[in-house]
Every structure is written in C-alpha cells, then in structure tokens.
Length: 255
Length: 273
Image 1 (cartoon, rainbow over the protein chains, first blue to last red):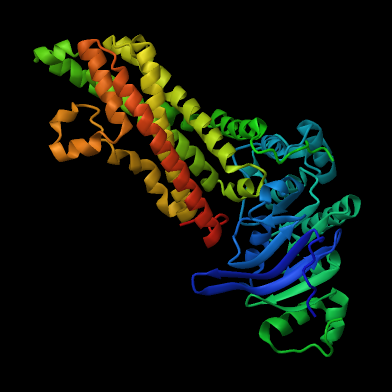
Image 2 (image 1 turned 30 degrees about the vertical axis):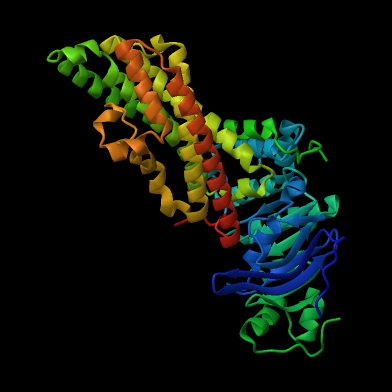
C-alpha cells in the first residue's frame, strides 16, 4: 500500500517519527513524490499534516527517520535547496505595513531573483496584482492577501511548492481562481506540489494522489478516483469521513 | 529561471541587504516608531542633565566632574538602545508572523543576525544623534568631543548589546512571545552592576568581582577617567574587548542552541506564547 521512499524523488520521507515530549505527532511514515506530481496530505486535525510539511521545510527536526528534498537531508542540508522551493501557509503572514511591492522586493532578494522588478511585473500580470501593488499588505481583502501570498510563494519559480490550506477562508470564486493559477503554474513549470487541505473538492481537482493520515500514520495512499472506488463512495469527502471516523474500509487494498 | 546561481552561498550580502531594506521600509512608513526611538532617550538625558546641573551647583566634586551623569546616561542608552534595536527588529518579525517565511527562505541565521546588528545601529543613530545635539544645546555637553575614545566606548557597548540581543533572540525563537519581556528587561539586570553612574569601588567587594566580569563596567570607568582625570584608559578598553569577544561567542552559541531546540520542539512556525 505504501510507496517506498526513493532518494531520487523530489521529496522522500523515510520512516519519519516526530515526538513532542510524550505526544507522537508523526509515527513512522514513509512516502515519496514523483517529479511534477501534485499530492495531497489529508487528515483530521492533529493527524500530523503540518508537522510533516514543517519537517519537509526543515523547520522541524525529526525524532527519527529521514526527510530528503531534492537530494538534501532536512533540516541539516536545507540551505542547499531552500532557494528551489517555497511555501504558503496560514501560519505565517507577510509584514502588514509594507506595500505588496516592498514585500515582493524583499522576498525576491532573499530568494536570489536576478531581476526582482521584472519578476514582480510578471507575477502582477499572472496574478492580477497591479491594482494593489503599492497598497499596504495589511489593508488588502482576504482574497487579495491570498493572491499576494501566492505571488510570494512563486517569486523564485520553485521546483517544489508546499501549500498548507491555500484557499482557506476564501469565497468560492476566489478559491476557484487560485486553484486555476496553481494548476497553470504546475503545468508550465513542471513543479512538484504537496498540498494539505480540508477542501476535498480542491483535492479532487488539483491532486493526482492522496495520502491519508490519521494519528500520525498513513491510513491510505492512492489516486482520488481509486480511493473513491475502493471505499465504495461517491466523493473524496465521504472517503475522508470513513477514514477519520473509522467507519469504513477499503473493499480492496491499494495497488 | 531567474534565480541567481549559486543562491545557496554561505553568506550573501544581498540577503542581508534585503532584511535591512525590509526594516527600513517599516521605519520609513511609521512615524510613531521613529518618534519612539527619540523621545525616551531625550527625556532621560534632559532629566539627568538637569540633576547634574543642580548637584554641581552644590558640590565642588560634581562641578569638577561635569558631564559624568549626562555622559553615563548617554552611554547607557547606547548599550540599552543597541540591544533594544536588535531585539525589537527581531520582535517585529514575530508580531508580523513573518518568522516562518524567513526561516523557510534561503536567509541564513548568520545573515539574519548581521541584518539585525545593522538595524540596531540604524535605530540607535536615529535615537542618539538628535539627543547628542540636544545635550550640546541644553548643557554644553559634547559627546562627540570625546573623539576616538567615544568610538572605542561605542564599539564596546555595541558588542555587549549585540551579544545580549542575540541571546534574547534565541530565547524568543524557542519560547515565543511569552518571553517578550526579556527583550525589554534583560539589560536592566546589568544596570546596577555595570556602575554607569558611580565608581565600581562603591559596590561591596563580592559584587565588584561580578562587575568586572561585564564589559560595560570598563567602559563606564573609562568614561569617568576621561571626564574627571582627562585620561584615556586603553587598558580598560582592551579588557572590555576581550570580555566582549567571550560574551559575543556565548551569545551566538546560546542562539544556535535555542534555534536547534526550537527545531526540535517545532516552535519556529508558532511564535506565540
């Protein structure tokens, strides 16, 4: 059922365990991602999604096991690869008093963009930021802030994009627009995307693989269509509820 | 892709510049922040200046030692404001919930620390230059008249303030905003022992041992020697530099240990209390 960790994968997680004192946040999970794939990490609150993503980003040190990103062991060798990846998360904001352009300028420099002004223009075109480029980030609407956060996460044209709830608190129209932009970026750049989300429709639309976590372990791992078929359900949300509540079982094991 | 190669160089002045620019944008868009840098040092200097003026009219010693209070308060402010400038710049990232963005970016800890050091000097300059001019206007006390000695005092005090600032940043990384008060109060632990306003011999003998372990004590003694006896004590400054080297190394080691601990405990994304 579980894909073995492969070291030539953009992201390879091998027997990852993370303990916070006596609490086991992640309990020996292994998976690897194919280059250019979009994979969802799903699970209820406390399932271990954020800890797993934080470990992949090098922000959390594993208790045991290994995490390899673009060939670099995380967190020890993170500085070899951080300029090739980026992320968006509800746990962080961009400085609110700075204008969007100022924030983009700072992050462009941090990520080593050669021509930051050009990159900002390109992103402003792609993500429709022109109207508020020179407004303070804190004075934008939620939808505008999300677009700015997305622009920041694409400033370095990352090969790996880690997204934690990228459309949380957005209206359906804006959320749909963001998903469209993510699909386009992945298609054009060939980027590998790891996504944590509670929006099952979003996962079905964006992802070609789903890893289901429960209490720090991988409960299932398959394509959205096969998961739905194997659990005999009509959509991914019902599969999610089956796994989260322990009320359903797959009719056949994952291939 | 338009990313410079190699973007993973061990130390990038451009990334340091990005962080300095980030804080410059912040200061230049917020006049209350700038005002805050000036008003308290100005109030302190004026209060101690008038006190010195009053005391010197009634004491031959203080008449002779003109400027020791104002000098002390200004040097103390260099020490305190230097650390505060460092720590507040760090705290601004926590208030803005931006620390995760920075920790996930190619910015290295050493670059972050150097950017905070530069920021502390900028904040110090914004606060202290106007106050030093006020001291000339009100009391005829010219801090700049100390010349080379002022540069040596300044460097020593700044090194101490950075060492403590780095350590406090480490504590904040590990313990989040719950440890915020450390940024404001840590330096006051040193206030009575570093003898800014009185000579070291005033302290009990056992406390003098601790006092001489702290670099600022040497600076304040050096300042009194300069203002009262018109002697520049190079020996004191060299000892202060040696102690500062140890203190700075200790601050960096503490920061790295707290950073490692924060990675282990998963507090880098949280930043709360």
